[in-house]
Figure 1 (spheres, rainbow, N blue to C red):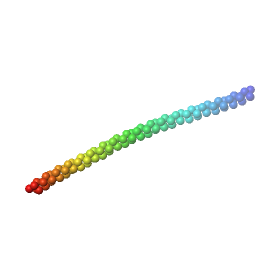
Figure 2: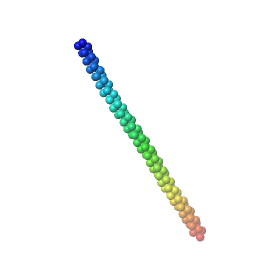
Figure 3: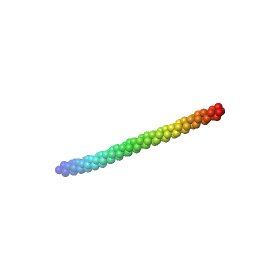
Figure 4: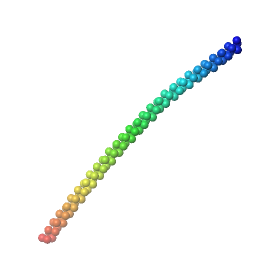
Length: 103
């Protein structure tokens, strides 16, 4: 009888330790699951933020390019207008000179 009581006692301790180990393991798995969900959300938020920043940068670059192209076109247009005005002034001066020479 003493051996049977001892065996049941040892078996009970083993079962209790196993149950405690299973409970602790389940708690750790649950905690790891929560951490994984948090990290996934964090990664998703970071990715969304990066894409948003890239989109803003892309729009800003196109806006700046358009602005520079507009400025270049404006400057070129002014230079061409000035060249045309200068050409007509030269032609007018040539005609006036010829009239003066011819008398």
